[in-house]
Image 1 (cartoon, rainbow, N blue to C red):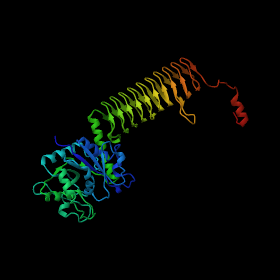
Image 2: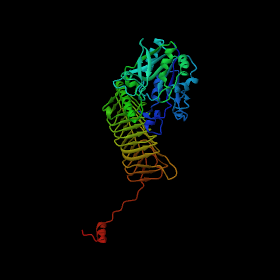
Image 3: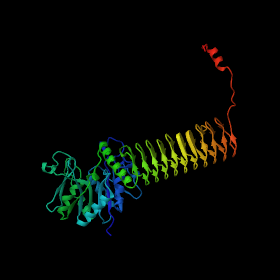
Image 4: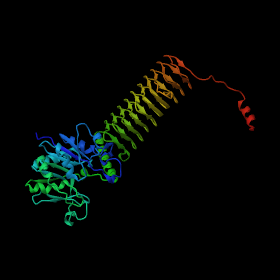
Length: 463
Protein backbone atom coordinates (compact mmCIF):
# COMPACT_ATOMS: atom_id res chain seq x y z
CA UNK A 1 0.00 0.00 0.00
CA UNK A 2 1.31 3.51 -0.82
CA UNK A 3 1.83 5.76 2.20
CA UNK A 4 -1.18 7.82 3.27
CA UNK A 5 -1.03 11.41 2.02
CA UNK A 6 -0.34 14.42 4.19
CA UNK A 7 -2.85 17.21 3.52
CA UNK A 8 -1.92 20.86 3.99
CA UNK A 9 -4.87 23.26 4.22
CA UNK A 10 -4.08 26.91 3.52
CA UNK A 11 -6.13 29.08 5.89
CA UNK A 12 -3.85 31.93 7.01
CA UNK A 13 -5.66 34.75 5.20
CA UNK A 14 -7.84 37.23 7.10
CA UNK A 15 -10.49 37.37 4.38
CA UNK A 16 -10.78 41.16 4.40
CA UNK A 17 -13.42 41.12 1.66
CA UNK A 18 -15.78 39.38 4.08
CA UNK A 19 -15.90 42.65 6.09
CA UNK A 20 -15.98 40.61 9.27
CA UNK A 21 -14.21 40.31 12.62
CA UNK A 22 -14.49 36.53 12.20
CA UNK A 23 -11.78 34.79 10.13
CA UNK A 24 -13.17 33.89 6.73
CA UNK A 25 -12.71 30.15 7.11
CA UNK A 26 -14.70 30.14 10.36
CA UNK A 27 -17.86 31.48 8.73
CA UNK A 28 -20.43 28.68 8.88
CA UNK A 29 -21.76 26.82 5.87
CA UNK A 30 -24.78 24.67 6.68
CA UNK A 31 -23.87 24.64 10.36
CA UNK A 32 -20.21 23.75 9.90
CA UNK A 33 -17.26 26.19 9.81
CA UNK A 34 -16.01 26.59 6.26
CA UNK A 35 -12.58 25.21 7.20
CA UNK A 36 -14.03 21.90 8.36
CA UNK A 37 -15.47 21.08 4.93
CA UNK A 38 -12.11 20.54 3.13
CA UNK A 39 -10.62 19.17 6.35
CA UNK A 40 -13.23 16.43 6.65
CA UNK A 41 -13.00 15.78 2.92
CA UNK A 42 -9.26 15.22 3.32
CA UNK A 43 -9.89 12.69 6.07
CA UNK A 44 -12.51 10.96 3.89
CA UNK A 45 -9.82 10.68 1.21
CA UNK A 46 -7.58 8.77 3.62
CA UNK A 47 -5.26 11.53 4.80
CA UNK A 48 -2.70 10.24 7.28
CA UNK A 49 -2.04 13.72 8.64
CA UNK A 50 -3.79 17.06 8.24
CA UNK A 51 -1.89 20.32 8.73
CA UNK A 52 -3.71 23.66 8.82
CA UNK A 53 -1.70 26.80 8.08
CA UNK A 54 -2.86 29.76 10.19
CA UNK A 55 -1.52 33.27 10.72
CA UNK A 56 0.20 34.41 13.94
CA UNK A 57 -3.13 35.21 15.61
CA UNK A 58 -3.77 31.44 15.78
CA UNK A 59 -7.53 31.96 15.86
CA UNK A 60 -8.22 28.63 14.15
CA UNK A 61 -6.46 26.43 16.69
CA UNK A 62 -9.39 25.98 19.10
CA UNK A 63 -11.70 24.99 16.23
CA UNK A 64 -9.56 22.14 14.90
CA UNK A 65 -10.55 18.50 15.48
CA UNK A 66 -8.33 16.28 17.56
CA UNK A 67 -5.21 15.18 15.70
CA UNK A 68 -5.05 18.10 13.28
CA UNK A 69 -1.72 19.93 13.39
CA UNK A 70 -1.17 23.68 13.10
CA UNK A 71 1.55 25.56 11.22
CA UNK A 72 1.92 29.34 11.34
CA UNK A 73 2.73 31.60 8.41
CA UNK A 74 4.61 34.53 9.92
CA UNK A 75 3.47 37.11 7.35
CA UNK A 76 0.95 37.14 4.48
CA UNK A 77 3.42 36.45 1.69
CA UNK A 78 1.31 34.22 -0.54
CA UNK A 79 0.36 30.59 -0.99
CA UNK A 80 3.88 29.35 -1.69
CA UNK A 81 5.12 30.87 1.55
CA UNK A 82 2.14 29.35 3.38
CA UNK A 83 3.09 25.86 2.22
CA UNK A 84 6.70 26.57 3.20
CA UNK A 85 5.47 27.32 6.73
CA UNK A 86 4.25 23.72 6.92
CA UNK A 87 7.53 22.23 5.69
CA UNK A 88 8.96 21.56 9.19
CA UNK A 89 6.01 19.24 9.79
CA UNK A 90 6.40 17.38 6.48
CA UNK A 91 8.79 14.69 7.63
CA UNK A 92 7.61 11.77 5.49
CA UNK A 93 8.05 10.72 1.88
CA UNK A 94 4.37 10.15 1.04
CA UNK A 95 2.42 12.41 -1.28
CA UNK A 96 1.47 15.87 -0.09
CA UNK A 97 -1.91 17.34 -0.99
CA UNK A 98 -2.46 21.09 -0.74
CA UNK A 99 -5.95 22.55 -0.65
CA UNK A 100 -7.31 26.02 -0.05
CA UNK A 101 -9.25 26.40 3.20
CA UNK A 102 -11.97 28.40 1.46
CA UNK A 103 -12.91 25.52 -0.85
CA UNK A 104 -15.83 24.02 1.06
CA UNK A 105 -17.44 22.03 -1.75
CA UNK A 106 -14.46 19.78 -2.40
CA UNK A 107 -15.18 16.14 -1.58
CA UNK A 108 -13.14 13.24 -0.34
CA UNK A 109 -13.95 11.44 -3.57
CA UNK A 110 -12.48 14.27 -5.66
CA UNK A 111 -9.33 14.46 -3.52
CA UNK A 112 -8.85 10.69 -3.75
CA UNK A 113 -9.30 10.82 -7.54
CA UNK A 114 -6.65 13.53 -7.83
CA UNK A 115 -4.26 11.48 -5.73
CA UNK A 116 -4.91 8.38 -7.84
CA UNK A 117 -4.23 10.30 -11.07
CA UNK A 118 -1.08 11.80 -9.57
CA UNK A 119 0.25 8.40 -8.51
CA UNK A 120 -0.60 6.77 -11.84
CA UNK A 121 1.22 9.50 -13.80
CA UNK A 122 4.34 9.33 -11.62
CA UNK A 123 4.31 13.13 -11.63
CA UNK A 124 6.19 15.46 -9.33
CA UNK A 125 3.08 17.62 -9.14
CA UNK A 126 -0.51 17.33 -10.32
CA UNK A 127 -2.77 20.36 -10.43
CA UNK A 128 -6.53 20.07 -10.22
CA UNK A 129 -8.05 22.23 -12.93
CA UNK A 130 -11.48 23.13 -14.19
CA UNK A 131 -12.84 24.64 -17.38
CA UNK A 132 -15.04 27.68 -16.94
CA UNK A 133 -17.14 29.71 -19.36
CA UNK A 134 -16.07 32.80 -17.44
CA UNK A 135 -12.58 32.25 -15.99
CA UNK A 136 -12.21 35.82 -14.70
CA UNK A 137 -10.12 36.07 -11.56
CA UNK A 138 -8.62 32.60 -11.83
CA UNK A 139 -5.05 31.64 -12.71
CA UNK A 140 -4.89 30.24 -16.25
CA UNK A 141 -3.27 26.84 -16.84
CA UNK A 142 -0.99 27.03 -19.87
CA UNK A 143 -0.56 23.59 -21.45
CA UNK A 144 2.80 22.09 -22.34
CA UNK A 145 3.57 20.42 -25.65
CA UNK A 146 3.61 16.97 -24.03
CA UNK A 147 0.09 17.41 -22.64
CA UNK A 148 1.28 18.41 -19.19
CA UNK A 149 1.38 21.85 -17.61
CA UNK A 150 3.83 24.51 -18.75
CA UNK A 151 2.92 27.17 -16.18
CA UNK A 152 0.08 28.84 -14.34
CA UNK A 153 -0.47 32.51 -15.06
CA UNK A 154 -2.03 34.62 -12.32
CA UNK A 155 -4.52 37.33 -13.30
CA UNK A 156 -4.81 39.35 -10.10
CA UNK A 157 -3.43 42.56 -11.60
CA UNK A 158 -3.39 44.11 -15.08
CA UNK A 159 -0.38 42.91 -17.00
CA UNK A 160 -0.07 39.61 -15.17
CA UNK A 161 -1.25 37.74 -18.28
CA UNK A 162 -1.24 38.32 -22.04
CA UNK A 163 -4.50 38.49 -24.04
CA UNK A 164 -3.79 34.99 -25.36
CA UNK A 165 -3.36 33.65 -21.83
CA UNK A 166 -6.52 35.40 -20.65
CA UNK A 167 -8.43 33.59 -23.39
CA UNK A 168 -7.59 30.20 -21.81
CA UNK A 169 -10.63 28.72 -20.09
CA UNK A 170 -8.82 26.00 -18.11
CA UNK A 171 -8.01 27.41 -14.70
CA UNK A 172 -6.17 26.43 -11.56
CA UNK A 173 -8.62 25.02 -9.01
CA UNK A 174 -6.42 25.52 -5.93
CA UNK A 175 -5.93 21.80 -5.21
CA UNK A 176 -2.53 20.17 -5.70
CA UNK A 177 -0.77 16.84 -5.27
CA UNK A 178 3.01 16.81 -4.86
CA UNK A 179 5.84 14.38 -4.45
CA UNK A 180 7.14 15.35 -1.00
CA UNK A 181 10.84 15.45 -1.96
CA UNK A 182 10.18 17.50 -5.09
CA UNK A 183 8.06 19.94 -3.11
CA UNK A 184 10.74 20.45 -0.46
CA UNK A 185 13.40 21.02 -3.09
CA UNK A 186 11.42 23.48 -5.19
CA UNK A 187 9.71 25.64 -2.56
CA UNK A 188 12.89 27.42 -1.49
CA UNK A 189 13.53 28.53 -5.06
CA UNK A 190 10.24 30.34 -5.59
CA UNK A 191 10.48 34.09 -6.11
CA UNK A 192 8.08 36.95 -5.53
CA UNK A 193 8.49 38.79 -8.83
CA UNK A 194 4.88 39.90 -9.28
CA UNK A 195 2.66 42.92 -8.66
CA UNK A 196 1.75 41.76 -5.15
CA UNK A 197 5.27 40.76 -4.13
CA UNK A 198 3.93 37.39 -3.00
CA UNK A 199 5.24 33.84 -3.34
CA UNK A 200 2.67 32.02 -5.48
CA UNK A 201 2.50 28.24 -5.14
CA UNK A 202 1.64 27.75 -8.85
CA UNK A 203 5.06 29.26 -9.71
CA UNK A 204 6.49 25.93 -8.61
CA UNK A 205 5.57 24.47 -12.01
CA UNK A 206 8.48 25.91 -14.06
CA UNK A 207 10.89 25.13 -11.20
CA UNK A 208 9.90 21.45 -11.29
CA UNK A 209 10.04 21.37 -15.08
CA UNK A 210 13.54 22.86 -15.00
CA UNK A 211 14.54 19.97 -12.74
CA UNK A 212 13.41 17.57 -15.48
CA UNK A 213 10.31 16.50 -13.55
CA UNK A 214 6.75 16.04 -14.77
CA UNK A 215 3.77 18.25 -13.96
CA UNK A 216 0.29 17.08 -14.92
CA UNK A 217 -3.23 18.48 -14.81
CA UNK A 218 -6.28 16.66 -13.50
CA UNK A 219 -9.52 18.23 -14.65
CA UNK A 220 -12.39 18.17 -12.18
CA UNK A 221 -15.60 16.97 -13.80
CA UNK A 222 -17.69 19.37 -11.71
CA UNK A 223 -16.32 22.93 -11.46
CA UNK A 224 -18.53 23.58 -8.42
CA UNK A 225 -16.20 21.37 -6.38
CA UNK A 226 -13.50 24.04 -6.46
CA UNK A 227 -15.60 27.14 -5.93
CA UNK A 228 -13.93 29.48 -3.48
CA UNK A 229 -15.34 32.08 -1.10
CA UNK A 230 -14.06 35.64 -1.18
CA UNK A 231 -17.03 37.61 0.15
CA UNK A 232 -20.51 37.10 1.54
CA UNK A 233 -22.05 36.85 -1.91
CA UNK A 234 -19.79 33.87 -2.61
CA UNK A 235 -20.65 32.51 0.84
CA UNK A 236 -24.37 32.53 0.05
CA UNK A 237 -23.81 30.94 -3.36
CA UNK A 238 -21.66 28.15 -1.96
CA UNK A 239 -24.04 27.58 0.95
CA UNK A 240 -26.92 27.09 -1.50
CA UNK A 241 -24.91 24.45 -3.38
CA UNK A 242 -23.88 22.71 -0.15
CA UNK A 243 -27.50 22.72 1.03
CA UNK A 244 -28.68 21.17 -2.22
CA UNK A 245 -26.06 18.44 -1.82
CA UNK A 246 -27.29 17.74 1.73
CA UNK A 247 -30.93 17.63 0.61
CA UNK A 248 -30.19 15.22 -2.20
CA UNK A 249 -28.22 12.89 0.04
CA UNK A 250 -31.17 12.66 2.43
CA UNK A 251 -33.68 12.25 -0.38
CA UNK A 252 -31.68 9.44 -1.95
CA UNK A 253 -31.52 7.77 1.46
CA UNK A 254 -35.32 7.68 1.72
CA UNK A 255 -36.34 11.03 3.23
CA UNK A 256 -39.15 13.12 1.73
CA UNK A 257 -38.42 16.85 1.66
CA UNK A 258 -41.64 18.43 0.46
CA UNK A 259 -40.15 21.83 -0.45
CA UNK A 260 -36.35 21.87 -0.50
CA UNK A 261 -36.31 25.59 -1.35
CA UNK A 262 -37.78 26.50 2.05
CA UNK A 263 -36.04 23.78 4.07
CA UNK A 264 -32.72 24.15 5.90
CA UNK A 265 -30.88 21.00 6.95
CA UNK A 266 -27.40 21.41 8.39
CA UNK A 267 -24.48 19.15 7.60
CA UNK A 268 -24.45 17.07 10.80
CA UNK A 269 -28.18 16.25 10.92
CA UNK A 270 -29.20 12.59 10.56
CA UNK A 271 -32.67 11.57 9.33
CA UNK A 272 -34.19 8.08 9.08
CA UNK A 273 -36.06 6.49 6.22
CA UNK A 274 -39.65 7.40 5.32
CA UNK A 275 -39.52 10.56 7.40
CA UNK A 276 -41.31 13.56 5.90
CA UNK A 277 -39.92 17.09 6.27
CA UNK A 278 -42.60 19.71 5.58
CA UNK A 279 -41.90 23.24 4.22
CA UNK A 280 -40.26 26.04 6.21
CA UNK A 281 -38.53 23.57 8.54
CA UNK A 282 -35.01 24.14 9.90
CA UNK A 283 -33.02 21.15 11.20
CA UNK A 284 -29.79 22.25 12.82
CA UNK A 285 -26.77 21.09 14.81
CA UNK A 286 -26.52 17.46 15.93
CA UNK A 287 -30.23 16.73 15.42
CA UNK A 288 -31.15 13.05 15.00
CA UNK A 289 -34.51 11.98 13.60
CA UNK A 290 -35.74 8.39 13.39
CA UNK A 291 -37.76 6.53 10.76
CA UNK A 292 -41.34 7.38 9.79
CA UNK A 293 -41.28 10.72 11.61
CA UNK A 294 -43.05 13.89 10.49
CA UNK A 295 -41.49 17.30 11.05
CA UNK A 296 -43.00 20.66 10.15
CA UNK A 297 -44.23 22.79 8.65
CA UNK A 298 -42.68 25.92 10.17
CA UNK A 299 -40.60 24.02 12.71
CA UNK A 300 -37.08 24.52 14.07
CA UNK A 301 -35.21 21.60 15.65
CA UNK A 302 -31.74 22.21 17.12
CA UNK A 303 -29.47 19.57 18.69
CA UNK A 304 -32.46 17.35 19.46
CA UNK A 305 -33.43 13.70 19.10
CA UNK A 306 -36.75 12.64 17.56
CA UNK A 307 -37.71 8.98 17.73
CA UNK A 308 -39.38 6.73 15.19
CA UNK A 309 -42.84 7.92 14.27
CA UNK A 310 -42.56 11.17 16.21
CA UNK A 311 -44.51 14.17 14.98
CA UNK A 312 -43.52 17.82 15.45
CA UNK A 313 -45.71 20.57 13.97
CA UNK A 314 -45.22 24.38 14.03
CA UNK A 315 -42.84 24.18 17.00
CA UNK A 316 -39.37 25.10 18.28
CA UNK A 317 -37.10 22.49 19.90
CA UNK A 318 -33.59 22.91 21.26
CA UNK A 319 -31.68 20.25 23.16
CA UNK A 320 -34.83 18.15 23.51
CA UNK A 321 -35.60 14.44 23.24
CA UNK A 322 -38.88 13.26 21.71
CA UNK A 323 -39.61 9.56 22.06
CA UNK A 324 -41.08 7.11 19.57
CA UNK A 325 -44.58 8.10 18.52
CA UNK A 326 -44.62 11.25 20.65
CA UNK A 327 -46.50 14.34 19.48
CA UNK A 328 -45.32 17.94 19.69
CA UNK A 329 -47.24 21.07 18.75
CA UNK A 330 -48.54 23.07 17.20
CA UNK A 331 -46.77 26.06 18.74
CA UNK A 332 -44.87 24.13 21.41
CA UNK A 333 -41.49 25.18 22.79
CA UNK A 334 -39.20 22.40 24.05
CA UNK A 335 -36.13 23.83 25.75
CA UNK A 336 -32.87 22.07 26.72
CA UNK A 337 -33.39 19.00 28.86
CA UNK A 338 -37.01 18.47 27.81
CA UNK A 339 -37.71 14.75 27.32
CA UNK A 340 -40.97 13.30 26.03
CA UNK A 341 -41.05 9.55 26.35
CA UNK A 342 -42.84 7.11 24.07
CA UNK A 343 -46.30 8.26 23.02
CA UNK A 344 -46.24 11.42 25.13
CA UNK A 345 -47.69 14.72 23.97
CA UNK A 346 -46.71 18.39 24.31
CA UNK A 347 -49.54 20.28 22.67
CA UNK A 348 -50.53 23.80 21.70
CA UNK A 349 -48.65 26.63 23.43
CA UNK A 350 -46.85 24.28 25.81
CA UNK A 351 -43.35 25.08 27.08
CA UNK A 352 -41.21 22.37 28.66
CA UNK A 353 -37.74 22.78 30.13
CA UNK A 354 -35.40 20.35 31.92
CA UNK A 355 -38.26 17.92 32.51
CA UNK A 356 -39.24 14.33 31.82
CA UNK A 357 -42.77 13.66 30.53
CA UNK A 358 -43.55 9.99 30.98
CA UNK A 359 -44.80 7.55 28.35
CA UNK A 360 -48.31 8.31 27.13
CA UNK A 361 -48.55 11.36 29.38
CA UNK A 362 -50.25 14.36 27.81
CA UNK A 363 -49.62 18.05 28.32
CA UNK A 364 -52.22 19.16 25.76
CA UNK A 365 -52.19 22.96 25.87
CA UNK A 366 -51.33 26.28 27.50
CA UNK A 367 -48.93 24.96 30.15
CA UNK A 368 -45.41 25.53 31.45
CA UNK A 369 -43.55 22.49 32.76
CA UNK A 370 -40.11 23.29 34.19
CA UNK A 371 -37.74 21.15 36.31
CA UNK A 372 -40.37 18.46 36.60
CA UNK A 373 -40.63 14.67 36.47
CA UNK A 374 -43.99 13.25 35.34
CA UNK A 375 -44.77 9.54 35.37
CA UNK A 376 -46.59 7.45 32.79
CA UNK A 377 -50.16 7.94 31.67
CA UNK A 378 -50.82 11.25 33.41
CA UNK A 379 -52.86 14.15 32.03
CA UNK A 380 -51.90 17.76 32.66
CA UNK A 381 -54.83 20.15 32.26
CA UNK A 382 -54.77 23.46 30.40
CA UNK A 383 -53.05 26.33 32.12
CA UNK A 384 -50.95 24.20 34.46
CA UNK A 385 -47.79 25.86 35.76
CA UNK A 386 -44.94 24.28 37.68
CA UNK A 387 -43.56 27.23 39.64
CA UNK A 388 -39.93 26.17 39.85
CA UNK A 389 -38.14 29.37 40.92
CA UNK A 390 -38.35 31.07 44.30
CA UNK A 391 -36.25 34.06 43.31
CA UNK A 392 -32.98 32.45 44.38
CA UNK A 393 -32.97 28.78 43.42
CA UNK A 394 -34.71 26.35 41.08
CA UNK A 395 -36.73 23.51 42.65
CA UNK A 396 -38.20 20.34 41.18
CA UNK A 397 -41.76 19.10 40.96
CA UNK A 398 -42.58 15.37 40.92
CA UNK A 399 -45.85 14.11 39.44
CA UNK A 400 -46.53 10.40 39.57
CA UNK A 401 -48.14 7.97 37.12
CA UNK A 402 -51.83 8.14 36.26
CA UNK A 403 -52.22 11.61 37.77
CA UNK A 404 -54.96 14.03 36.69
CA UNK A 405 -53.91 17.64 37.09
CA UNK A 406 -56.98 19.80 36.50
CA UNK A 407 -57.03 23.09 34.60
CA UNK A 408 -55.35 26.20 35.98
CA UNK A 409 -53.34 24.37 38.61
CA UNK A 410 -50.12 25.90 39.90
CA UNK A 411 -47.66 23.50 41.51
CA UNK A 412 -45.23 25.45 43.71
CA UNK A 413 -41.97 23.52 43.89
CA UNK A 414 -40.57 21.66 45.70
CA UNK A 415 -43.74 19.59 45.71
CA UNK A 416 -44.87 16.11 44.70
CA UNK A 417 -48.15 14.60 43.54
CA UNK A 418 -48.48 10.86 44.14
CA UNK A 419 -49.57 8.15 41.68
CA UNK A 420 -53.22 8.30 40.71
CA UNK A 421 -53.84 11.60 42.50
CA UNK A 422 -56.03 14.49 41.34
CA UNK A 423 -55.99 18.26 41.76
CA UNK A 424 -58.99 20.55 41.71
CA UNK A 425 -59.31 23.20 39.00
CA UNK A 426 -57.72 26.52 39.89
CA UNK A 427 -55.68 25.13 42.77
CA UNK A 428 -52.34 26.44 44.00
CA UNK A 429 -50.64 23.32 45.34
CA UNK A 430 -47.93 24.10 47.89
CA UNK A 431 -47.93 20.83 49.82
CA UNK A 432 -47.45 17.24 48.66
CA UNK A 433 -50.56 15.41 47.44
CA UNK A 434 -50.56 11.72 48.51
CA UNK A 435 -51.18 8.92 46.02
CA UNK A 436 -54.86 8.60 45.13
CA UNK A 437 -55.83 11.84 46.90
CA UNK A 438 -57.53 14.98 45.59
CA UNK A 439 -55.60 18.17 46.25
CA UNK A 440 -57.68 21.38 46.35
CA UNK A 441 -56.15 24.70 47.32
CA UNK A 442 -58.40 27.64 46.47
CA UNK A 443 -60.76 30.16 48.05
CA UNK A 444 -64.30 28.83 48.55
CA UNK A 445 -66.71 30.52 46.12
CA UNK A 446 -69.20 33.14 47.39
CA UNK A 447 -71.94 34.75 45.28
CA UNK A 448 -72.92 38.31 46.28
CA UNK A 449 -76.50 38.98 45.24
CA UNK A 450 -77.31 42.38 43.68
CA UNK A 451 -73.66 43.31 43.22
CA UNK A 452 -74.17 44.70 39.70
CA UNK A 453 -76.88 47.11 40.88
CA UNK A 454 -74.74 48.33 43.78
CA UNK A 455 -71.85 49.07 41.42
CA UNK A 456 -74.15 50.91 39.03
CA UNK A 457 -75.55 53.07 41.83
CA UNK A 458 -72.06 53.87 43.11
CA UNK A 459 -70.81 54.93 39.67
CA UNK A 460 -74.01 56.73 38.65
CA UNK A 461 -74.57 54.43 35.69
CA UNK A 462 -78.11 54.10 34.38
CA UNK A 463 -79.28 50.53 34.02
